[in-house]
Length: 260
Ligand SMILES: [Zn+2]
Image 1: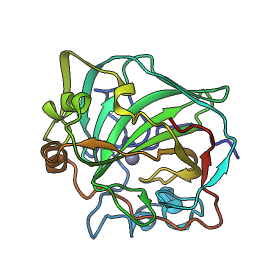
Image 2: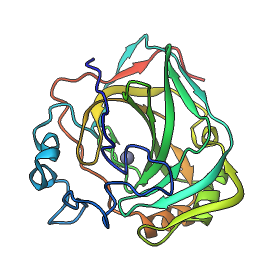
Image 3: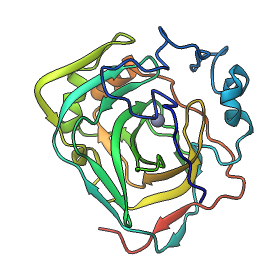
């Protein structure tokens, strides 16, 4: 895979910024076109809003995709090195983003990626055999060269989720609002399903500028949130999903021998 190097912050939603700092993509300070999910600024027209967003229309390795018929493969092992992290939540107008203020990282084989932030989409962006889920969480990581690895976690209705309840309780309802919560930590490890089998494929950011060469790792097993929790998230983050994109010959892989 070509290595994509980040030279500038690209996307407040997909590239972590230090929580609390103003991003160049903030609506109030941005000189870039405001993208969103409405008729005038939504996924269908992202590619036309700016030359910088051209890949959204012209890219051939875009995300999300419909996940089906994965080819079993012997893939580099994934190791999660996450720890309890003080809660800092930002409503950036596109999503709810939780900053990784601590030392959290992911190893894919021998490659180390630092967790920058995680955020939420509703409904899910990836689908599985055509089926959509209530929500999807993206944990965005970046290695030293700027290559991205994103862990996708599908969310379905079920039991209440204890760890995500901390996020739910402190959801910033207003665009631009940041909540730094004293004395409350969440370990991102508690946000993952127990079974870590995952779809893997090469894709892109799912928001402008739709940069490609993102290593996608989407957990095959969804996690559960209660109906009330999902409703609370959807009251703040809703219809912020990009539709699935064409595979264009890309293969979807799944690790073998990792079932628990
Ligand atoms: Zn995302």
